Length: 90
Image 1 (tube, rainbow, N blue to C red):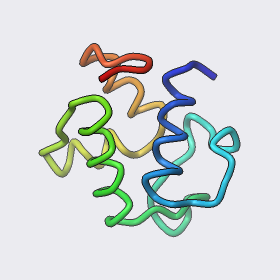
Image 2: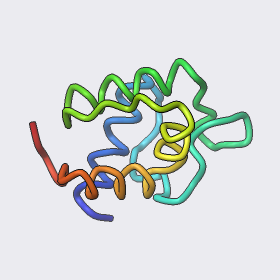
Image 3: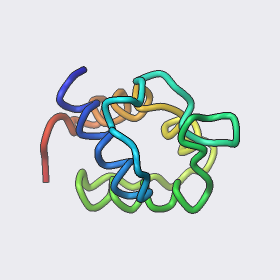
């Protein structure tokens, strides 16, 4: 697990107030929906988006693109890396 993916898993668990070990979340598992292990919903998506903006300074404004980015930790990490937001940052 890279530092960025671990950091994102911790951010998701904290932002969504989930009682689980971030290390148990796989990079490719689906995060949202009733079939997802974490079963995150639209309110959780908002919480995660706000946490990402605060920690990394990125804004997710397009809803279709946001859905794709937040689908998994791997997608989210790829998005942040593409925007030069890797590792612990502002």
